[in-house]
Image 1 (cartoon, one colour):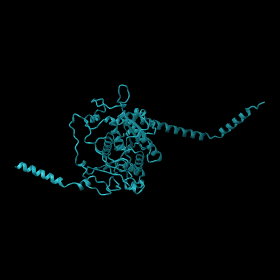
Image 2 (spheres, helix red, strand yellow):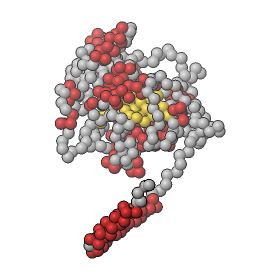
Image 3 (tube, one colour):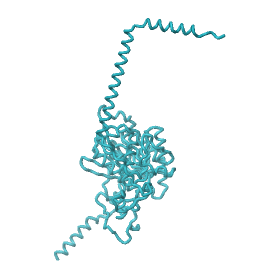
Image 4 (cartoon, one colour):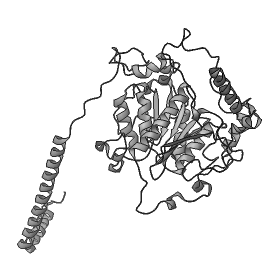
Length: 462
């Protein structure tokens, strides 16, 4: 027969009764009052936070939902129309094709550009390309939007705290929903980030939509083919290690890239074209800090940050986007290096040839491959003069492209080691394209002009 549990229950009741008798009523009451005070404080804090959120929501102007430029079927525009219409977002850029400046401008819808670094320069350049109708943008950055970024263009105060690639993806998608935007929030200077960069540039990496960002402007992402590399890379980073990572990834894949930068005093900037094997890469003529192996963190002064002006940032971004368009659509001339100095409103261009003794084995291998191709190391050839005209019946718009003084090849020889960027020295002498022609040319150029002028004056007086 089982033992009854009543004795154990009686013993437990007796123990609890004894414990209650030993409790000090005043101590229990004091603890209860303390807990009540804590609950009251928490309640007041919650009420204050709720009021603050409600006031902020009442003062913030809600943004309208982005309107999508679609056809009647509801799908994004897959082609660009030159129709002059208030509802056609591409009519103004397609006018360049109509006027004969660019052949088949709508090819840009089939092209992909990667932008590494979406800060003051990269974000604005990406916006310009999106407005021109680029097919796909691949963004890389690991930083977040801060209030300190508001002195630049593109980002807004309500985006503070978002990853820059996510904020850029939202904004670009609202500007042009036809553009597919991939966002990679990762540091390309790390081993994992470099692998992701190489995978994305080669077209092999899968890129699921960011969880932090709604799917805006990503319709074309589901339809684009995999395995196709990007057409061009824009390097807009602000540190040496990231530049080296982009340089090595592009050399490894044989992808052209445009490197850009703004000086720490925000008064100068540059854009450099890098064509593997044909122009100098970042390691052919590295800045002195990179060549000497100095730790970049030791170069920054404590309590002092780099200056930033939206004017200089926007100007360099415009030069970068312009060079990208000319490269992608094959019009005009893209300089190897363009420098800008704000203090004297000075622009300079120069050829930058690859260094045969470049520290990068990838660059030396690319130079060897280029040398095996006839004319591989020669400067990029200008369009043939006898090419078929865009308008066979004549120049409908009477537009002429003439060479200015800055377009001539008879530049003065430059001394070896001339600085090509703030803090950087060229690793080898620059090639002077005009020196040979000047040395072998005749002296009749100026004399001939004077003789002709004298003949004309004599004819007038006779």
